[in-house]
Amino acid sequence: MENFEMPNDFLWGSASAAYQIEGAYLEDGKGITNWDDFVRIPGKTFKKTTGDIAVDHYHRFKEDVKLMAEMGLKTYRFSISWARIIPDGNGEINEKGLKFYEELIDECIKYKIEPMVTIYHWDLPKSLEKEYNGWESPRIVDDFVRYSKVLFERFKGKVKYWITLNEQNIFTTLGWMTAMHPPGKFDDAKTYYKVNHHAFLAHAKTVLEFKKIIPNGKIGASFAYSPSYAINCEPKNAMSKLDFDDLKNYWWMDVYAYGRYPKSAFTYLKNKKVAPEITKEDELILKEAASKVDFMGVNYYQTTVCEYNPIDGVTPYATMNTTGIKGSTQITGEPGLFKNPPNNYLETTDWDWTIDAMGLRYACREITSRYNLPIIISENGLGAFDKKEEDNSIHDPYRIEYLKNHIKELKIAIKEGCEVLAYCTWSFTDLLSWLNGYQKRYGFVYVDRDEEGGSMDRYKKDSYYWYKEVISSNGKNL
Ligand code: BGP
Image 1 (cartoon, rainbow, N blue to C red):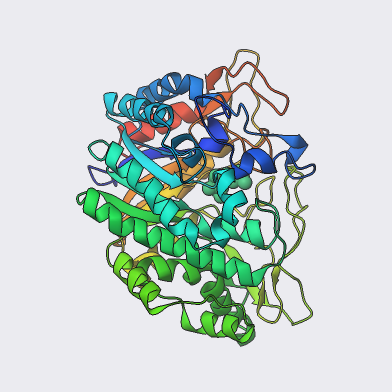
Image 2 (cartoon, rainbow, N blue to C red):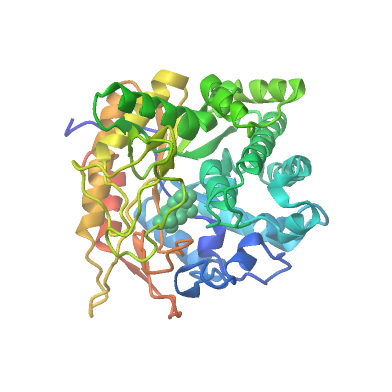
C-alpha cells in the first residue's frame, strides 16, 4: 500500500463556495441573496459574521489561483453565485458576473488546473424567495435550468466537470427543519419533502440539458454522505440503521442514481402525510436523468452511529456546536426510529465532528456496491483553530494527520475496486464557515482575518507544503 499510486489522471483538488470566499456582495451588479439577508438576523451566525467581504477572493482570485498552481493542484472546485449571473434569479443576465467567472476559469486553465464548477452552493437570489418562496415553488425548476444553461453555453469549451447541487440534504434540512439556514423554517416536514422534490427535478432537468450542450462533460450532484454504523447487533438497533439509511442517505442518493425514492421511507412518510407528490412525468424525468449522471459527488466529513429511539425519545432539533467548545452538541434523532449517539471508538474535532478515516473507504465501497458509479470526493477536511506564529508560519500537524489518514483509506478503496475520479479537500484558503465564523479554519492557506476583519493576507500552512508533495508523488508520499 505504501507504494501505491493513484491512477495517472487522478484529480488532486481542493474546494470552496462563492458565499464563503468571494465577498464583494454588492459589486458589479450582483443581486442580493438569501444568505446576504439571513446573516443579518440576530443570533443566526457566530458573532454576527457575514460573507460581505469573506476572504476577499473576488479581488484576490489571481493570487489564490497562483498559490494553487504553485502547489500543483490538479482541480479546483468552486461555486458560481446565481445572483451574480442573473441578479433577480430569472430576469436579465449580468455580463459582469459571467466575466468574473470566465476570468477565474481562464486563470485556472492557464495553470492547467481543471475547473470543477458547482452550480448551486446555497446562495439563492433573494428575489426568487420574495416572488414565489424559492425552492418551495415548482417554478424554481425552470429558473434553475435556465440559469444552468446560461453557464453551460458560456463555459462549454472550458469546463468539463459540473456539480448541480451542493448537499441538497443539508441545505433543505437546515432550511426547513431546524431553521438554522435560510429560509429559517422550523419543523415543516411537508414543505421539506416538497422542496426536496423540486430540487431533485431541478437537478434532473439540468442533467438532461447538460447532455445536449456538453455531451462529453461530466455531471452529478454532491451529497453530504454520512455512512452509518449500528451501535451493536441488537436487532432493533440494526433496524434503526436501516431506517436511518433509507431516510437520511438513500432518500437522496437513490434518486440521483436510480431516479426513485426508497420504498420503505416513502411509505413511512406517506403514512405521516408528508411524502412528496410525484407525477408520472416527474418519474420519467428522474429516471432518465439518473441513467445519465456521470458520478456520485460525496462530501465526506464523518460517520454516524444508529440506535433505536423510542417514540418519546430525542427529536431532530437540538443545539449544534458552533463555538468550538467541545462536547456542546446534543444528540438528535427521529422519534420511533433512530437516534445518533457519539461513537465511543473515535475522536472528535473541537466542533464535535467524529473523525473516521475508514468511514471514507466505507462510503466509497457502499456507493460502488449500491450504485456502481464513479465517485468524486468533492469535500473532505478538518475544521480547527490554527495559530499564525510570529515568523508567519502555521503549524497544523493535526490537519496533515487527518488528511493523510483519509487518503490512505481512499487508496485502499481504489485498490478494492472503487472508481474515484477526484479528491477535493475542504478548503484551499481559510474561509467563512456558514454558522461558525472565521475561527473554524479548513484551508491550506491561512487568511489573516477573524470575526472582526483583518489584512486578508495569505500565508502557507505546513499542510500546504505537505499536500504539494502528495500531489507531486501522485499520492505515494503521504
Ligand atoms: C459542507 C459545506 C461546505 C462547508 C463544509 C464545512 O457541509 O458544503 O460549504 O462549509 O461543510 O462545514 P462547516 O463550515 O459548517 O464546518
